[in-house]
Image (cartoon, rainbow, N blue to C red; front, side, top):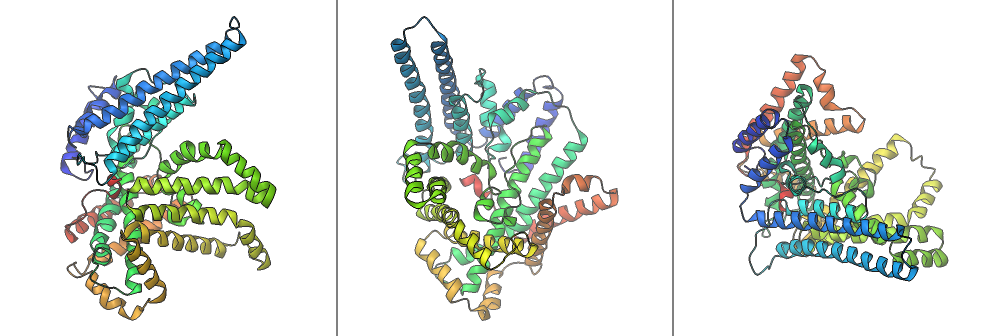
Length: 512
């Protein structure tokens, strides 16, 4: 039932929606909590232990921190206490707050690290969604620590925030102040909103089936077959397929997740914004897995950049190397740290760490040497506002991103470097046709054209959205004939693609 495209999930969803808008109309959050508990039960009852541990520790820890914060304010207001005693009590309360915050953070992230470590002695299986709900819960705890809002007093309501079933498989990482209030509102059925939600679900299915699942086998035949030594052109072809597959799988899954949530009237955080139209690597990561990027920015990057040692480093660089380096060096180091953590979040294998560091160092390098790039642009009289330059920046960024995918997809670092070397120095395009036929051996003759057509459709939709056109809203206003032609096309592509391959399985990011 944890697959959003299964019959079991469809039945579960219909029953949940029926109860949500009828029996539980006045207590809709209770219906969502029950549905979330049932959904998670299908992943294995033992997973509830981890879910409850994270939920209770962050809920109780946040309430303790809030009480300490209230006590601290009271001490500051109390004019009957001597200054020395007041200072002493403030130090004690601040220490208690900090100890509780770090205790809960280390408990949860320590557990996550232990479970994800490949050699854990108990042989624990990674529970579904643990990375997502743990990051989300820790974000809530840190928000309370920073006094961003008041803690949730009701544990059951808080557990709904932690366990809300659409987000469990692959996010997004929601914020309590953005979604918590929505759970408590009364939602009524909205036909137009529901129709757009269904559009989104089917668009996600379209990307998952007609692109991602079809490309899996071809990619694996190149990167999971150490015996066959393919030409550089074929390796590049497989990397481009992986680029499309990963985007279609992850963004397609997120489309389904957000569409299901919208059926209940709950708007979750967007997680993609046409990332392959980015004009820099930093811009790419502001468009790809947006909720994770924002989490890292708010809870890792900014706190790290504001530490005393980093501030001192910035002042030292400013004094010895000028204002520019003094300004960009601290955030450059912060970006390297963030992407190091993102790499580990993807997995404890070294190729993920290298992939993360590659992204961090490229962004740091581009920031540090920005004046040099600006000077080159000035000398060459390049107009950065020209359309051709915008296209050039997109292509350049796409190439940089795809270099990173070598280390993300190929587990052996030596093989990844060798494959990258072959792509550059041993491209050998004359072998492409023969080797491509090997990759597609066993596929129906129409499978690859179908996937290419789907890629073109996704590109067109992305291009329209990049130009501020809401495709779902625009489609909803079209004549009935146009709408149903699109419906039949999408559904037909999904059904035909299902007959093309037997592989695919779940979502890639459910493993993270």
